[in-house]
Length: 470
Picture (cartoon, rainbow, N blue to C red):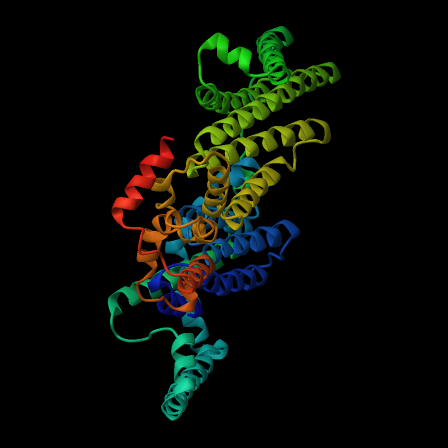
């Protein structure tokens, strides 16, 4: 009921802090349902739950939709792990399926429980509902009287209390059903999860040492040659390579990054299949597997470093964008996964699935909290101050999170960059629970310093062409 009411009242005007407020009763319901079913919380379960709530802070902080979307998706995935308590790769990958199937079974379970608790010896819901109804009536009556008696209290009440008017009634009813059904699904899953960890994946057929090791040794040798060339270029400078190939600085960086990113992904796939078919007859086989795959992982880390360096070169030439900051973040996370695989080869891999998923969730959280749009604007403003080039058209498409950095530009370039953002923020201010901190901060900056009247479309078009192609 609490989740349904909060969803109905808070989620109709956008996503910000309201999403976290709705998630709190869902978390409490799942916690007590699991305890009543004899499933006491474990450290990893509590960690997943706290992580899911932490990820929902991103929409409250950032105005940009894309990091908030990633954070919400990651929160659903991490929350499903808290409900299921998966430990293996099958539990991690298939656990969310049980959450979605509980949308139907959870409603039936909730209805049966409600019937049991509204009658008979266990009938304890009726008095609670009556108490809530009386409290709501008292709040409405006396709140309306106090609001009519004092204008300041009326303004405070209007800003804090959600709009409960009958307008948009069908949509509010849908939000109530979604919230209540989601809370019941989470509680039912926490009480009776599907045990995906018990699904056993048969190991692959072990190969002979030569059949298994020879392709990997050849691949490692290829990695070693490539890394040697990269180190020679790094210490010898790029001028000789560019002169020999005829490429520009930016072309050399752009051409290499995407191929190296694909190399990292394929290397992880090779390691997965190699572990599945690895020889495992005794100590010598285990030593061989650790030596070959450890060497391949170490060489892969050099490839990751080379890919990140290529992207840094490309950003120096053309500036930072959402795509570039996203793919370099993925590349860094893939490098972390390779390091975790190397550690698992020494300490054992029982903990590896949970740590890999936790690192992915932590990466999404850090990515959102650091505000990628703000980083993009800040880096491009610094690049403009050094080189005199600026992608004005791209800056105008950023979110309100970029306003503090763009506000540092000199006029009329500042106003040209902020013109579209200011127009988007001129509309009515949303309620506090549906307004992100990034949007509120942008409004304060724009209210404190007006846009220059010189920044008309002619001047902005001239600056766009002049700064982009100087």
